[in-house]
Image (cartoon, rainbow, N blue to C red):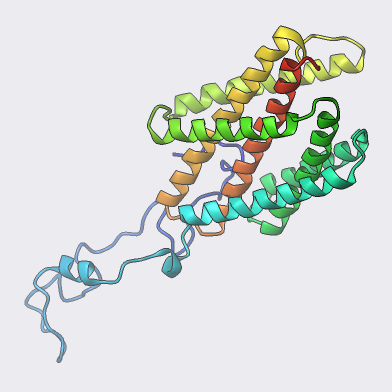
Length: 288
């Protein structure tokens, strides 16, 4: 099925390239394989070749197709690219933590805007660009590092709490998905995407209202806690879409380079969860 993840749902993503077994209509092949003499057992074999009674024997004896032979995406590829992306994010965050002023929100906002622009380019770009993905990770990491340091100034220890909370959500979501407690169906994806769109629109309305001095109370108090929990749940929902898209790509024989797109999608979901976790912990600790 077509992925419902906004990052993975573009045309050409996790699809069948020439020479890769994947999505789309497979080429018609002879049931006798590549042996032209298997279809006609009475045909004369070339001198020096032994006839094969069963064409399946040839297929069984043929060398298996592995990642190094076909260039298909594997789970190891996804893990490696995701690790590289997250390490870049963490390294940039450490740079911001030790260099950016604790009260300089302008630096964080500038990095966040630049990261948003790069993320949009990546999302709408047909081909995968590892350089752009790592650039996004660096900019986003700098933003998160500067923002976390600002929160840490008023609430010591909140950064590590948000990191641990994000890791816990990721582990719980992965366990629920792999154990079959969460099944990504088309209905599940449609409902989740609809809720996510409604949530984003509500946050936009709240942001516009705040610009004119109105406070809808969506980011503070008991209502803010509920909104924070919903936001984190949506982050976990995005992770399940990521997991399903990755498994679909691997099963369909997606090109190895698509592992970078998978890493980008996972990073987006984890950044969402971390930001909402940071905000929720701040509310629970008495700062809104």
